[in-house]
Image (cartoon, rainbow, N blue to C red; front, side):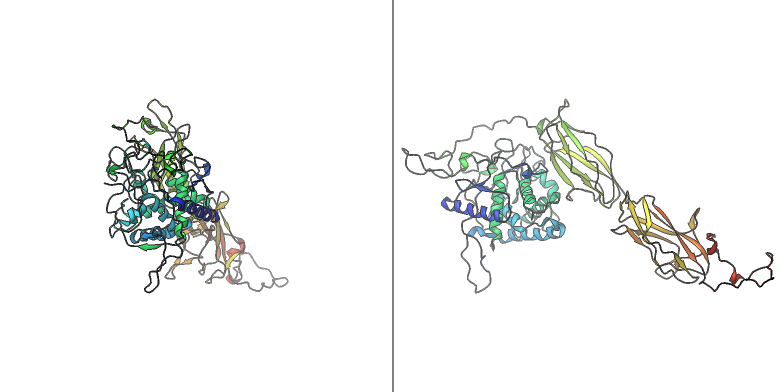
Length: 611
């Protein structure tokens, strides 16, 4: 299977001007600070990204494999050519054209992310820029009608020789290599990343890294994790560097993104422009016509720079561009006859993961977990191992996620060998779930952590008003009962509540007479369940009605978490004129009955009505 990658290409004098134009445009749009070397290649002064540019997860989608480094052409693609009948086509560079199916995949992914993660603000031009530098838009659009590449696109074996060392993680299922991982497909995902980041973008029920719809959607979700907003220059920089941790890569992608923002157009599949030089089968570095391995730092090696004219006393002719060393050299140094055996990597010596004092993981539904998971990578003898990747995966029937909404997060261990997982965010589903920690590139047993989500709760309830709640027999209460729930002084939203008309303060069973609510059929009900406070912690109960029983009655509202509030309701006849005092000399024996209509009602004494 041929791997479609070209070496670093430069376009003579035009490239210098192109880079300058691209950099100026990026600077105007608040893109990351970019400078230009004397050869016209966008770069930065330092060889490594600054701390704020480092990918927070410590993992990359591509494993820092090959990529095309050709810069956009000098001529702007704007205005894009029109496809309308009778309208002349503008003469624009062929690089502005994107194969139809590939372009459709980029735009479809943007549309889906606009709904799934609207705060990310993912532009399809970013996907196009990454697709350009990773695979030349799937090898110039060599895809089938459903978006699957006609020929698998594979990067070189990540064997630690000139590349990162990533041992096989998929048993060759995606990349056909059961010894080392290789980047796969038009967006060049390594298998261990595709395992959790893969998406079904064309609706065929499969997650195929060789399908441009699937790969583009996966790339969009990958770039939108951690709550990044790609309209913000800092977040955009972090997202691109998390895809491939190279400043040179960042600058190249930004250049192409800006180029496509100025205009592009659809071209037939299979007719796209692809750099002419490609690696041989398997992508073995060092053979004739192959890509030079990506350096571990973003600095530009001599073999990747355009050659300069010879010094006085030489031939007087410029050396051939792209040939190592310049001068009269005509071919690269042949590879050694046998493949060198790389020394064990840090990952290879990890024997197990050890918990580092992780507390009990508990959070209320909708809240962030205040506790974080910490795991240390250790050798068989218990020595800590720094700078290895630990992947944390959420499993179980839960809608909990890490910050940013992802179920998976990969973190590099620090100098003490410890990896701290991002904060967990509880969803609405209650119950226990598991977070498993694994060493990326190793088959050592995972370390499981149990986390529990409890229901939303309130610890205090209070009425929002103080108007007495009164009603005449057979009438309806003028005011509805409204309460506010709080938890530790903060608003308690979406908390489950129950309202019951009880017999007395000491007897919380449901009363059978007195005030009542009405159900959907208009029938009296004295208990309401499945109530919930709103986003402001407020709960407004339905209207209350009174039967013919007079007296003082109690309404009790309770919530999850134990908050309770008892509200007093009074049912009494309308105010009557005061009774005349007895005539002078007229006495009334305590033994004689009184007219019930003039007797004090129970509400006057403040006593509760019993059953």
